[in-house]
Image 1 (tube, rainbow, N blue to C red):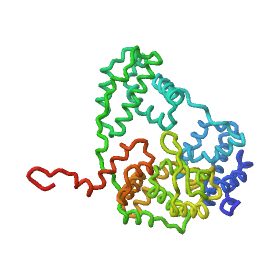
Image 2: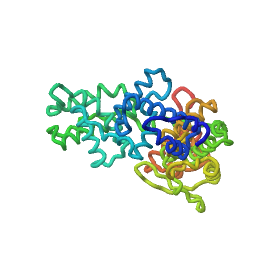
Image 3: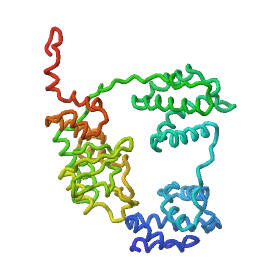
Image 4: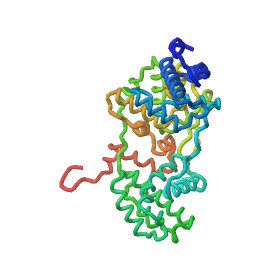
Length: 405
């Protein structure tokens, strides 16, 4: 143990596991300060268990919540939720010292029961990934709650007018993207309810289409100077800065999505061939060239940035322990933080994808090549970038009556 950890004295039923927990924290990359805080939390929990006459085998989730309440009442200002105890509980459960986590909590009512059956249908029958299934479930939950009465879910007499009324009332309060997701999720729910026999006739066609126009917007790309400021905001003398620089370089040079960067594995990069495998939308995998500057940025991070305690084979991992794979949300946070440091405001990761495509267009690349870089399935999806070439558009613009073009 480090000096900071050795000064933490643990007494009570958890005393035999203190040294092992300290070693586990060090192995997983926790700093001495963070490890010492978690060990002090273990010491407090162990003292509380003595006062409550509890042994470790009785440390259930409800008892953990009682401890957190007692800690809050005692005036502590940190580690005031059960989430703070998770590293310790995971370790102790691995030793089978405390009870395993409970299974899925019991469903409270008819809405929860129906939601769970719908989720299972989406995952098994429709093949949706968990994240997509969660989005569908969240979108239809308000509809099901609206059909709840003291007698349960009233679905037998559901009409097309009921479906349309829900959409007309709900969608004006949503963004265009959320409204379209709600429409898609509602069609899936109504198809499911018909298959289950909960409604007599299919009502999916009663869901109105959400108004939206393809190619209506203009891609918001960064200027070259802004890209340089964004990359320069990363302190490449630090491990965290090297990681962020590599992530930003991949996004702006390869036009990747945040999830594609997060999903990159060590085995996906072929250094000799100068290629990497990208796992894109719809579980598609494609090989793309790895430019020299991108390879250099990633290699610098792997040599002098990726912690030896990193878990799994993901290229990019969290900066703070435990060093698990960085999520798509984590990649987006890297971009947002860099934008703020560079004085550009909060930037979304997808804006760097637009930047990569726009720079190709400015360099004279045809839309077909841009579509290949972005891995679009249809050329129509890439067509929005045609509007970025304003000089070419001026040559085909018709004069405005009574004025200049």
